[in-house]
Image (cartoon, rainbow, N blue to C red; front, side, top):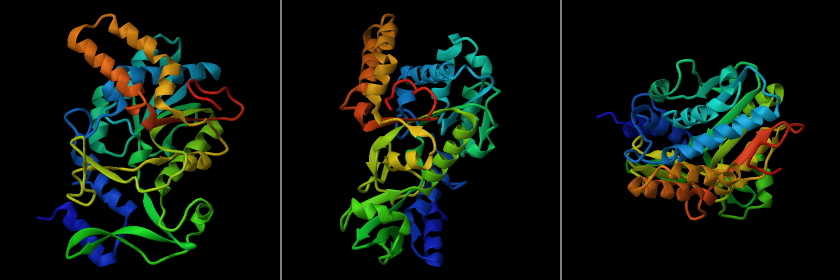
Amino acid sequence: MNTLADRIAQIIRADGPMTIASYMQHCLLDPSDGYYSTREPFGASGDFVTAPDISQMFGELLGLAIAQAWLDRGAPAPFNLVELGPGRGTLMADALRATAGVRGFREAARVHLIEASPRLRAIQADTLPASVKHHESLGSLPDAPTFVIANEFFDALPIRQYVRDGKGWRERVVGLVDDALRFGLTDVMVQPDLTARLDDTKDGDLIEISAAATNIARDLGEHLAKNGGVAFIIDYGDWRSLGDTLQAVKAHQSAPILKAPGTSDLTANVDFETLAQAAKPLAASRLTPQGVFLERLGITTRARALASSLDGTALDQHIAAHRRLTHADEMGTLFKVMALYQKDSPLPPGVTA
């Protein structure tokens, strides 16, 4: 049987150990056996649950935050309403429903989805209006004021890992030992792009970088600097990368990273500082815990309004969903929010400068 693991092993035999970024790319996006090409990962029956799956309130509040940012910028028409990695389209559907009462918003919005998976594109097409347009990248967006949501998008982009060794770095790679996939380290190399990290690391420290994330943030910065708008980035991570955060998830449990490639989701924490630097000359808000962000947007008021028509199990589930999105012991602190915006424009809702 020619499995994805077999094909990855063949590449390693021919070319030598592969970077973790290459391994992730094969595992997640291989056309025939990649994770996002073959699986339904979202929800209780999948491998992981995202905030839009937990409660409609998440997408509703993000939609209203976008609408307020749009109003604060003079309600331009038309404008691009963009989501990066929209999954099943649940968040965008909730956002569009919540903003139906904002005068002129829906009429002016041109919805664009950045999605690489043909299978997920088909699901999104069933969930959202027929006028929605799909794109491979930000580069094909039309020139217009642009308002962007990126929820749990950057964590799925391929990373490379480097371990500090003196004044140089060893890259962590995937190779073969007795025909089995194994992690290893390269020889020490000087990495000019990592020179600044010599100041805040010591021998043995591991850092993660994502060229894909940097490039997308740069494209986002250039587009918003030219056309105006706002981007909300919501993900797990911190201001600066330090430590091994690569993980595999299957059936809501941690899974071995190198076992059965293509059958588990692979993610890593987001380095928000790198995104903010790449998106210059845009301003970046302070990192805001998701729970604080949602409370500022009024999630408790919305939760009470929805609760008024619920009882029994439905009410219990609703209360649990509110807690999961906002509580410090759940997603409230683990997930962070950063907004990108033009320096001379109003601060987007829910964040601080």
